[in-house]
Length: 360
Image 1 (cartoon, rainbow, N blue to C red):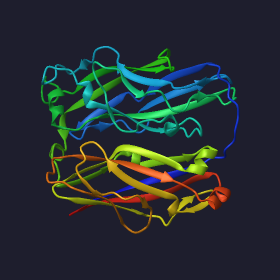
Image 2: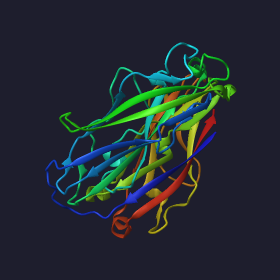
Image 3: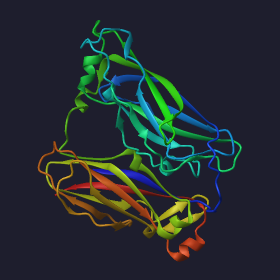
Image 4: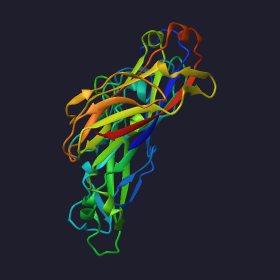
């Protein structure tokens, strides 16, 4: 079993400047595609830009450090058409997940610099979920009169036979529609509200769902690379980054189940990291390692690997039961030699990797 993913290393021109600490004006807006149409037991992913969060920095003096962003249910989930459901209940919020996906490539303010967790987060009916808790980078205007930052996320309906409980109970032909009101809240470092964005999701579940044979079945061997690892980005933005290198830790990014011991291998599809505008870099500037995550069993070996076009053993793991799911944290590091620091040109350098699961 194999998975392909892409790693991007971004080199930015570095400079020093003194920033104002004034609070300034920041406008927070939320937009959504709103509509989730479930036709399969496989659930539904709203897509990479299902939610758009817009941050307008309206003056030069903005520097908001350690800000946070949360989501909570903003009222009752209701059935607006086709009710009641087969179970007599409304759709459960904890069957929806939120996941950060991408941004608008602002050099200083982006998912990575903010320290976003790119794993799926399950929503909760009776809890406020922190999607960003004390961001690592500030919202700063960097002495510009006007700046816009866009952050994007998906909402996903999880797969499973449970969906039958929330189909229409009227008859076998009736569609059911749920209204799910959510509230996103932006806070400063003292938990003072900067702004809110109410978004309402319309969930439509069809009466006849397809792909029932594909869910709630555990294969003998399974490998999944999380979405956040499928398009990972490491950014060089400061003098310290160039001297020390840049690391990226993706928690629980690799999911494995196996009925026996196994080996995870990795290889590069490309012989170099390539940029469409700035040339190339050798593979040895990038290294990777797997460490134990949630549910991980005994690890027999997990060396730090410099990338190569030849398959290399990234992790040797143990398992006796295919029902036991194991997660592993994926660590990437990019580091330049002294000569490369002097000669590297700003740009995006990309390489594609293949991960393989080998039964033992």
